[in-house]
Length: 145
Image (cartoon, rainbow, N blue to C red; front, side, top):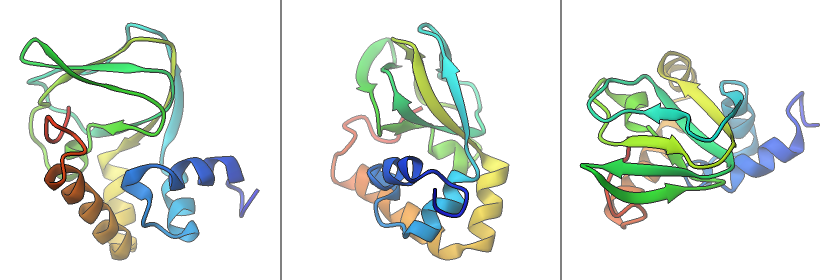
């Protein structure tokens, strides 16, 4: 373990595109925020049109993302969704449902905002990663959920 955070968790976070530019110290701070949950297939994480205040990171399992009645993508280990809710209070753009039993990390807007206030350099890195995801087509549907 590295300062109380399992190395496996840090390694997992470092492989997530959103956190790829973050230092080990940044990753430690991020890992202290999230809450890991085990959820069953069929769990609905986000519902289009409803407001949300959390962001989800998939550790294991698969979820389906549906927008306007059409499946736009699936999420697997290392993928994330709901990131817009961390930044602004707008309705969700898609419905995301677990296809399999899953392990996820949930990050709340309030705790994430606190981290960004304490460590603005993390915020810059995350905003850059989100902009690249949108601009370079890592998500053909744009910001999801």
